Length: 121
Image 1: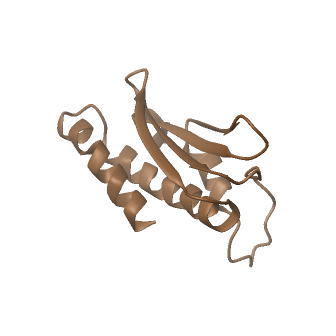
Image 2: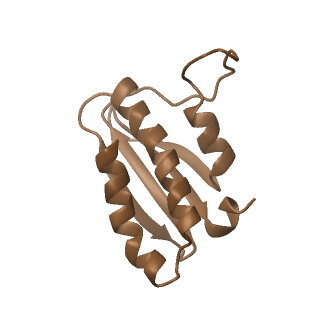
């Protein structure tokens, strides 16, 4: 997860430096990316790929792909559960998120988008 966090920080540095993106938005992206990458490693299959890009000039989109076929779920967790809250956090903090299935029987990309405004609430 450290490599993913470092890559996102590096990719976003120019946008932060030019005031196109707030540091708080990048921090939120780092947190949520850690959750999604962890899910890909633990529950996915094959190599994990990470992509970061701007969407419509206002949103930051993070995509995490793996060869697994399972879909992320936002489920009710017991209060004493040690895991299982990551996608609920993605749901709560992102502007929007989703899963795109790859062509063929396996593979998916879980993505989320953040805007500076979504992070401030």
